[in-house]
Length: 418
Image (cartoon, rainbow, N blue to C red; front, side, top):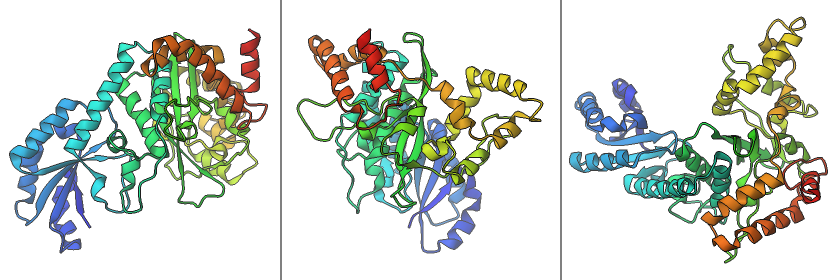
């Protein structure tokens, strides 16, 4: 087993060593934002550990994929100069058990970030809008065929973007992390993606499925909405010369989770409560999870991650709506928090107002803008039509008649009538 100590806890090293008397290989975990001052970090670490017989390695924990290649290059130079091992740790993917691959080499990280930078250069060279960038990211990620790592390999191999961009292994979390990595690098407040976790009724409590919630605000398309994405559902099933472009789980309105024919999703959340000054509070999830008849997103498969909660609490449209609603109900509830605690079904009754379907017409325009990144320019228009027809053909096998996503019966009927 490895001995890992956070940089800011190094004063506690004696008690850690007592618990691990036979362990002299010390990994010092540091936040990535201090990687730029790695020499100073090294000097401080040496002072704090020079009384102990330990071999030091540094691990810089990455919390998002918007990493500067210059910083990684500086770390590599620092590693050679000090003759010390330096690794990265993808905080999205930390294994419970130790695998050598859990710690990412600088060479592996540099190779992945170079590829990621080149991907974002393509996005910017085509002047893609936020909506188009999310579509590009989705199509880029889903062109990969699902391939799970072996039991002897670290789960990070098929999940961390530092590995999936460089290798053949990828599972549900890997698809989501690639999309998240591109969006992180795109670095636009009008495009955000949030990790989401769902599971099937038939799965064990330890089996979960990674999906995403997106927020897109795009003036070009008149879009300002939260949506649900399941890239695994749209991933390639075989390495064909002519790829399929499946978009049946792309930017679903959140209400469509109730209309999936095989409605498998459940979630129980153990996260901490919201701060009292935030109107979106997590406490209600505990009650809605216990009542399967309540039409709640907790039951239908939404996880209100901390980033998603922050987005909601910063969204002026959401704040304005709930402020007006609270004023109307002020005689009944002493505070907005009390209102939400007592009426947790707001998650499905109200929040869907901030999750609208994207029309098929808008999606086709975006496809004609994005497809040249993947296909020959002269084939784009006919291919966009074929993609729409193919997705419409199979959409009714996945959703009932009340679904409102772009390919649903209602939306594609309106599109063709126009």
